[in-house]
Image (cartoon, rainbow over all chains, first blue to last red; front, side, top):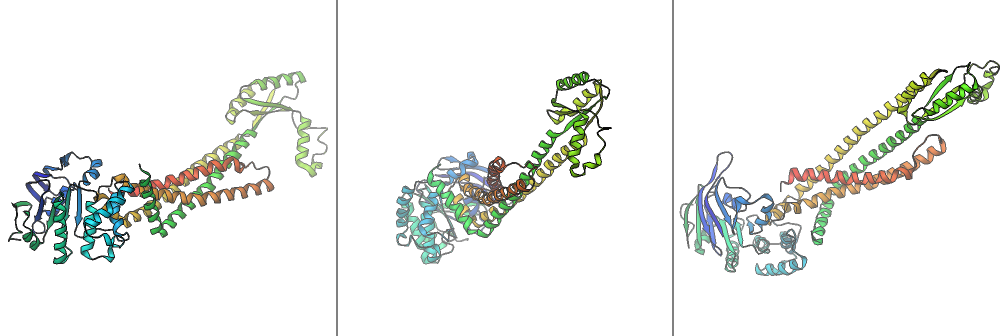
Amino acid sequence: MISFTGVTKVYPKGVSALTDVTLKIKKGDFVFLVGPSGAGKSTFVRLLLREERPTEGRIVVDGVDTAQLRPVDIPFFRRKIGMVFQDFRLLPERTVAENVAFALRVLEVPRREILRRVPQVLHLVGLSHKSRAKPAELSGGEQQRVAVARALVNNPPILLADEPTGNLDPETSWEIMSLLSEINQRGTTVVVATHAREIVDRMRRRVIALENGRVVRDEEKGAYGCEA
Amino acid sequence: MKLSTWEFYISEAVRSLVRNRLMTVASVSTVALSLLILGVFLLGAVNLNHIAGTLEQQVEVSAYIDEELEEEAVAEIVAMVKALPGVREATFVSKEEALERLKEQFGERQDLLAGLEENNPLRDALEIRTISPEDVTPVVAELKEIPGVAKVSFKEEIIQRLFALTRAIRIAGLAIVLLLVAATVFLISNTIRLTVFARRREIGIMKLVGATDWFIRWPFLLEGIAMGFLGSLPAIALVVRFYVWLTTNVYAALPFVPLLSPTEVLRQLNLLLLGLGLLVGGLGSAISVRRFLRV
């Protein structure tokens, strides 16, 4: 589903963010991407979204070599990856249902289809009863669920979460991770970049650890590790 | 493009126009003011052009005829002149007729001319109109070659001044138009820039979920075009009222000033103002979308 081959990213000022990263994430995998700040997690995410190009190496996502993408193809490429952020990124003046529907409206999905899919995905994240609420009326955990619903509503093969629990208390964080795990069980490939050591240790999933731009560890049923 | 997509664009544009209503009002007013000035100016320009054209057609060349000539010789000269290329009309005016005209011009004070009948100082002349003002110079040259033509005079100076005036108006007009258009485009692009800024969150999400660049741009372009449209309406209304008022008064007070009638000019002018409003709005937002959206 995702493969990095010898990927190196050097920023114009000469800072090298990733060095010779080679990894494979298979369809249906659940992967934690861990490492201290500045280890290269953000660069990894940006390369995956094709917000940036690697200086060297090859990135293939769902059969698409990102180097071959023309600028007009990028929006269509992005539709393969549902994205969740630490700061939720919801539209404050729209309701929960509108926020989720927005993702479909900008993709020109027919209205009937939107009306069918939005309640489905809100049900999946357990927010059916809040569909008319505005984000400000929700707790942090609920807002993140809305963000997850928005990321999933277009059925992307990959869900990419960048510090999804960074703004949440441990209890809520755990709920969000369970939700992501449930989504993974339904067949979506899930990649979570995170600092949440306890959760990573408890979930016993594949862990890829980055440090100074290199993959220092990649183990099935791994833990966060002691050094960070 | 689907209908629901256009609904989305329009609702986004309206949402944004309402949200930044102060800037919207400012931009729409600027468009209206610029187009109004432009409209009034264009009306002035087309009318001056029209007046200049009318006057140009009235320009005539006078050929004075040798006093000793017999009537047959005079008739021969008239025929020759009429046959010259570029001549539209040639009329023989005897010195008696010329004196009568002079008397008419003097009106009440024609006693000043008393006694001139016996010793008329005026000369028989041919009054010639050319087909176009450019024909004047060659016709004058030809006339001078005809034996029996004693003197040729024409209003060269007036022609030259008219030409110069028309040219100056056109150049000044172009400069003013460009300035106004630039100012309007600038203001609209500034408003759209604020809009882009106000909506950066939505734009970010749209990019994230894979909206195409054009999908993101359209609402902004529509917003600019809408501002141009809204501005052109009051401008057109005011220009129409102004010109109807002006022509009514001028026709009544100064009937000899050949202003174009409202029906002759206003339809085209209104279409031009409307088109320019839309263009300026679209252009202004296109600049901002290009520079600040970076989609």
